Image (cartoon, rainbow, N blue to C red; front, side):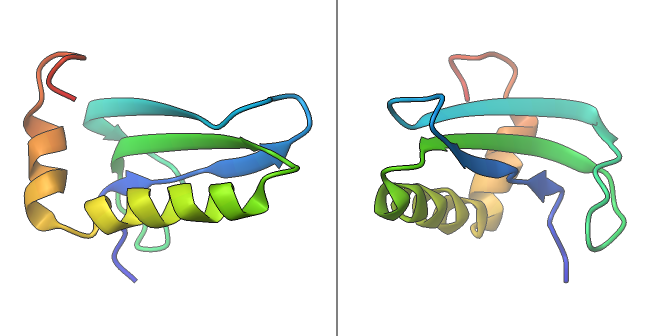
Length: 85
């Protein structure tokens, strides 16, 4: 399975009250133990409240829906600023 240079670690916890997403971009790529053994260039960290599993799944679907598009992944890699992303 090709990860396209993207990782989406995610967790549900009682420590948060609302969904939070952080995005990290690495030009050089980082080792992330990806299924295709390739470096990861874009990382989306998703944290959700334990009490909202449906919202967690909705957020995952939204993230993966965008990341499945080549044009979006290319845009992320070429982004130069936080505002771009």
